[in-house]
Length: 156
Image: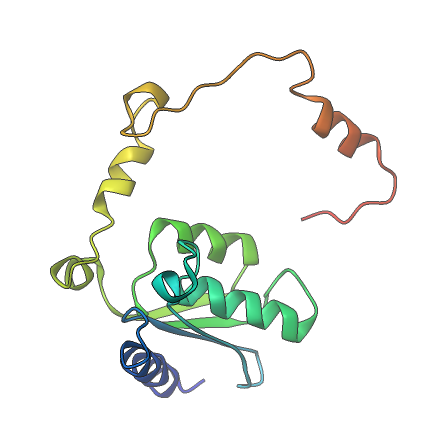
């Protein structure tokens, strides 16, 4: 694979996105044959969607284009080190590798600091800035029990 070429393309996507009122992030998913199967740019503010990060957008498009929910044998190239949300999406999509240009420190210096999220993850639920409360309902396990009882299901 031509890693530097694809990574440079993700940087170019990020720069172009700024000119169309998007955030400074771009990402590309490439399949095992070197085909670009998904492209994403940060559209958080333009779409009013806090999950519209470049990596998530590229993963969504690649999954649509390949008609699958797992991107094994695909590589993600992104202009910046993925945030915690994108990291989760990367693992759920089961990408083979990730290459990034700018790191967390450069992102923070540019006004995109996600260190607080990493810190929040390690706190107890009630100590978080946004507290989490588990309510003990009798049916809390019903969705998983129903899932387990299904003979025909797609595991992921």
